[in-house]
Amino acid sequence: MSLTRRQVTSAALAAVPVALAATGTAQATRRRRTLYIAGDSTAAQKYADAAPETGWGMALAFFLREHLEVSNHAVNGRSSKSFVDEGRLDVILDVIRPGDFLLIQFGHNDEKSADPTRYTEPWTTYQDYLRQYVDGARARGARPVLATPVERRKFDADGNALPTHGDYPAAMRALAEQERVALLDIQALSIALWRRLGVEETKKYFNWTATEQDNTHFNPPGAIAVARLVAAELLHRRVLAHRDVRRLDEEVPESWITWPDAAA
Image (cartoon, rainbow, N blue to C red):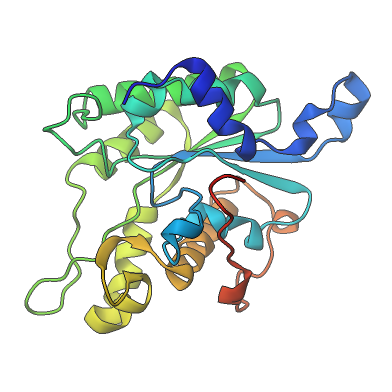
């Protein structure tokens, strides 16, 4: 469905921190830095009608100090192309400020070759669209951060976890090197985690319920685990400092995850 710029802006308002309403030089100087997430359903905010499905972006703030805001603009079903074409990147660029971060994770829906509204080719159009995020953030004094797509749950008959994203992670890695952008290799880290956990244990991290066996989207433990990977990589890649992160080695209760009503 095609959305107008007004509709996209209205839908994104709930993701924008209240602190951004402040105006004036002194207020802007004192405001907290914001980490914006541009991505797909694996990161997106989920609502009560989707519980227990949980995007990792819903858990990221648990690993960041209070002086950092998380503004999660990830939306179900979007690719690097459709997110731009619907005006969603413009919404972020309208409010992002110097010192903020733009964390970019796409790939799941870029792979959908039968859908021209979302499909990108990894070594050409995928990289071209990702550059729009990188260039847009840098033009506004914010720092872009690329994150390879988190892996799905897929195992072969011998119990080996398998990659599912084709050339998209490699294309993003190459772009990060070309553009000198910090890269969080969440694809590599997540598939390593699924390998350690194994076939049965990984079911506890994905949205497996009595009525659904979902090997792409997470439940609270899975979202928390992936958010921990993201926060640890933000530290490891020196995007953030030790003073910016917390709880990397601590248990985070599942009860901290909440699903608001969609109308909210």
